Length: 510
Image 1 (cartoon, rainbow, N blue to C red):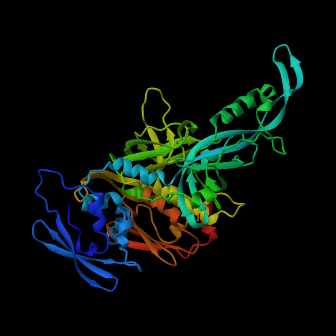
Image 2: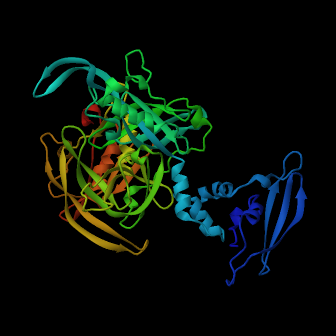
Image 3: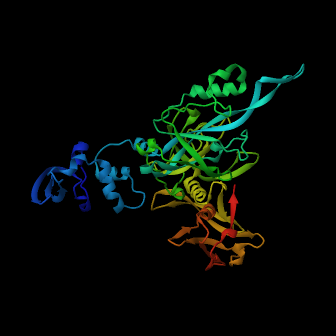
């Protein structure tokens, strides 16, 4: 067994001997020879560890009031929680096991388990109009019977991730896709669903036959009218079962294909093993990185598929409503299907790196799917949470009035990480009339090298070595902030800063 660093020599080392097997044969390793109680002062006992190479180290155990040792219920996760704050940002349970314990693990299964604790499946109802086959209004020998119309509900399914969780009160914000929440057939003015039902992993209790019957009912309602109970408005009622968690729509943006749902006072969440998702900086993701997708394919419940990042940034056109939007995406080879939309894309440590939202439908192409990078998804979600008030259900973005472009792009080998990356020079290409960027002193051809977003409580600094980093960073800006742009102009460094930004500097992003 590997030796713990000295700052881990507290009450947490004994249970490791119970939970972990010995070292593998054939390796010249140092293991623990004995553990002996060598001192006791009040409720603090001191133990000495003797290693097979003769070294010794000490640790202490704090006893309970009745003299019983507290270490009996300590787990590997407790050890990890004890040490993680002393480690670099992003240090995970897998990192801890790899550094300190000689045990074999299925890292993909552990990563998936971490991710599953924040995964949800989503079912959406939309109020729609359907033919009323009990109400014929005419007959034509060429067209057949015509009918009146009546209201019913249609359904769709997708997935999401728990972004913010208050387990004590059973509250959560969930990130999903806008297109999971939207239907062009909805009679709602904005096309957003009228009812949202979610399930955590293992809690799906809906009878899918009810949904299939509903679809058939909408097409043949005369013969299937007795399959359902109906509410006061005459709409079919779907029984979502014991595991259902109701959610409400907070807001969303079609232009980013991101929406946010909210769960309030859920007893299921209060008593669950759910965790809010751990978000990884998607700017660190490179081609070849692990890409684990967790979604609700074919509405059959939460499931896991595995693959890699194929392309770390590309732009695709997606049509959600009447017009197409252009989205920046990861391309992945992870298998996804209808129902995966809105579900998380996770790295090899179970951290969120994206939200799955699209796949190529060309039958000659296999496993070419897409996910919105987590930096975009989370920043849009934060903006929705910050700005939506129950009436305005869209997000906001600062308007600089400038067009930027890449003037130089190249791949390079990062010796510190052993990964291939891309570096770009990002330059000012043009200004709009009355442009804020022009007013503060930026000029055509300026190469933006760095930006600082100054807030009341913090300053966010972002190195601009990719075009998308500058674009995505604007989603972090709020009223009351200032932005400093550092640049080079004719090989001379300079910087400019905006005045304190007001509501007039922002636009709604529907």
